[in-house]
Image 1 (cartoon, one colour):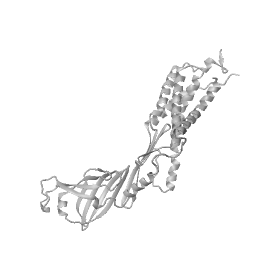
Image 2 (cartoon, rainbow over the protein chains, first blue to last red):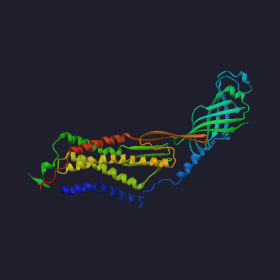
Image 3 (tube, one colour):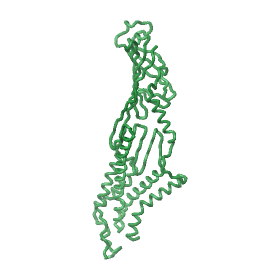
Image 4 (cartoon, rainbow over the protein chains, first blue to last red):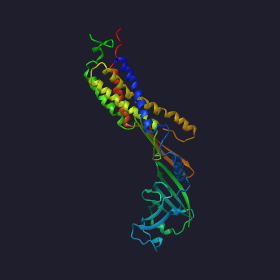
Length: 182
Length: 196
C-alpha cells in the first residue's frame, strides 16, 4: 500500500465505520432504522397531564381522605373527660391520621399543617412530624403533632385551612386548601 | 539513500524523540478509554426529563420511561468504534517507526478534538431553543451550564422545580485527552512535499 492509498483509506475510514454501523443497525432493527423516538411514549402526554392536573387542582386532599386515629400525649394526662384548665403547659399531643392517597402515583408529602378555625380564630393547629411517601392505593399513617390545650378546647370549628407541600418527579407543589367545619 | 514514495525512508520516520512517543502512547491508551467514561453533558428538567449525552452514548428518560432514537444510537456506536480505532492507531504509531507510523499517529491524535468540538457545538445549539421557549410564553430558560430553580404560582398552588445542565468530569477528561492529542499531532509534523 502506498502513501496515497493509506491517506485515502484513513480519510474514508470514519465514513466507512458510520456506514457499516448504520447498515448493521438497519438489519438489527428489522430494516426499520427510524429517526423517531421509540419506547412507551404514546402514554407520556396523558400521564403528564393527569399528574399535573391533579397536583395543580385547588384541593388535591379533601377532608374525607383523612381519618383520625389514636391521640397520644407525651405527658401523664388523661385526654378524655379533662377540662382545658387542667392541661399542663407545653404538653404535646400527637395524632395518627390515616390518609388514603388520592394520587394514582407515588407522592412525597413533605409537610402538612392543618388549622382548625372557629370565629376566625385558630383553635387548633396540627402539623406533620416527618415527611411521608404516599403510595397509590395505600393508606399511609401520618403522625401529626399539636398542643394538647388546643385539642381540648376544640370540639367544633367553622372551617379548616390545610397547607401542604408535596413533591413528585422533582416538582414541589406548595398549596393551601380550605375545608368545611363541623 | 533508499526512497519510498519519492522521499528518503529516514525522512518519513518519526524522529527518534523518546518523550513524544511516550506521550503519544499514553494519549493513545487514554483515547481508547474515552467512550467508556460516561456522559459528557447532562440536562435534567426536574425528574421529568433526564438527558445524558456524549458522542458515544445517549440516555433519554421521559417520566421514567426510557426513550431511544435508533438511528442516533447506531451513529453513536460508529463514533465509539472510531475513537477506539483512533486510540489503537496512536498506540501502533507510537510503538513502531515505519513510514506509515506518522500517518496513523496524526489520524488518531486529532479525533478526540473533533468530538469535543462537536459536543460544544451541540450544546451551544440550545441557545436558540431558549428564544423559542420565550416566544411560546414558557416561563423558564434552559441554562447552558448551571442550576436554575423555576417557580410559578397558579391560583393557590405554587410550583417549583430545578433545571440542571452540566458538563461532567468525563467531558473534562476528554478535553484534556484531546489537548494532549492535538499536542502530539502538532509535534508529529506532516511529511514534507514529495521530491520531484
